[in-house]
Image (cartoon, rainbow, N blue to C red; front, side, top):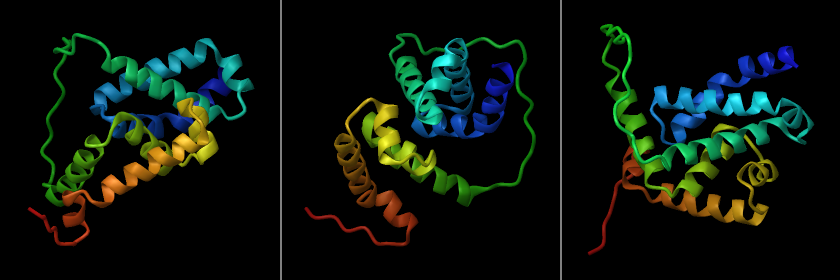
Length: 170
């Protein structure tokens, strides 16, 4: 059990953290959410292994853990023993601007739509796996994804990113 779990964590950690970031966490918060998710999975590893699709099971735990973290009342500062080092790095302005436009567009989606986009296009789950991970019917997954893609298609910041002009009607 320990080797199987360790192998699973090593293989999935970066993708799980990035998925949590795309769901709306800061990098540090994403690592905490993924760590909590994996703790839950470790305590019930037998159930995870028996699941038809381990990835879908773990992503469901991840989404539920993320949602639970958002329900907390207090979101203030957390003390730390040491401050992170600040290194001088080249200015990646274009990458930051692109990432900001994408992050803002994702933030304008509903939580359910954002989860559908992340699970489909980042985690690479198919509709059946997404339905299992989100605990909804496959038709619900399709409608959430369709609405999310429609919203992203018409997002003015993403249109600018793709080089399209934005027109507004008054």
